[in-house]
Amino acid sequence: METGLFGRLGGQRPKRGKVFPLALSESEWRRKLTAEQHHVLRRHGTERAGSSPLDKEYGAGVYRCAGCGSPVFSSANKFNSGTGWPSFWAPLEDAVDTEIDRSLFVTRTEVHCRRCGGHLGHVFEDGPPPTGLRYCINGIALDFRAGEALPEDAAKPE
Image 1 (cartoon, rainbow, N blue to C red):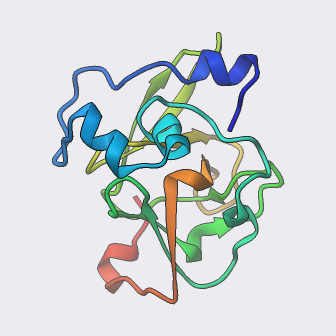
Image 2 (tube, rainbow, N blue to C red; image 1 turned 135 degrees about the vertical axis):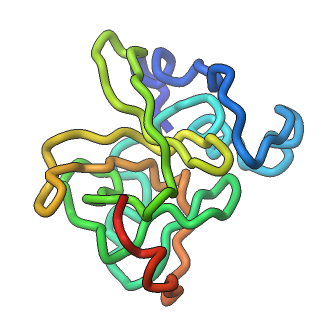
């Protein structure tokens, strides 16, 4: 988990007023998640680059939100960005939402789970074809289910 300046600056914003299908109280989230997961998913923190084993995971399967279990990414859309975080060129259809993030003196696009609002990471416009996008995702915010397959229509990128 990021403990330096960037971790302190980037990890203090609770979600602003948006209502999600799965809404738990702060105490329920703290009971459900590890301290590290809570820091990233609920407080918009960032794990240290290269710290997640999911960065080097390239097996077939589904990446689910570690907060609510909702499928968010397919292994078919994963690529090695060299950044130290799991990266995808597209999320699953209707799995994530985005919003502008100005927390580190720059404008970025934050990615969060559409079901629970958990902070997953950010999306950048320097990814590979076919989208040109790089969804840079905190591994601790994901639960990888090796070998899990999605219905064909759910696997279409957003």
